[in-house]
Image 1 (cartoon, rainbow, N blue to C red):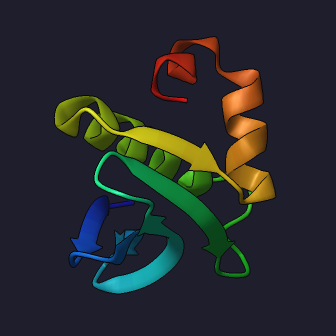
Image 2: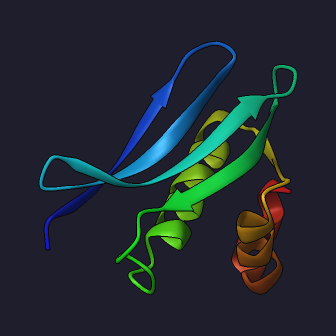
Image 3: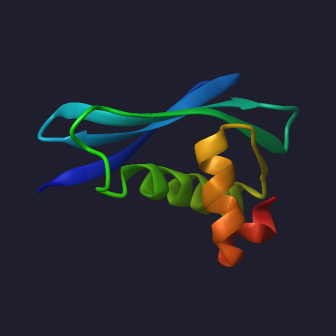
Length: 94
């Protein structure tokens, strides 16, 4: 399966998406909170894609972006929060 993680954003908010063969199969939205924080507020995976790890891949992409841009992440979305709770390596961006 050929999947790509993409970032779409403007000054106020944005989202990460998982694209499979040109179709968006998952999306995780965030908003900027000031100049140095993002709030992950929602994660959605299309039916039939459970267990493929799309959600975790989007959280991982958000963590990589946060590290690159020196941002902190506030995971309000229950799914994203559960990934942070289980992943010690991501604690540096909280």
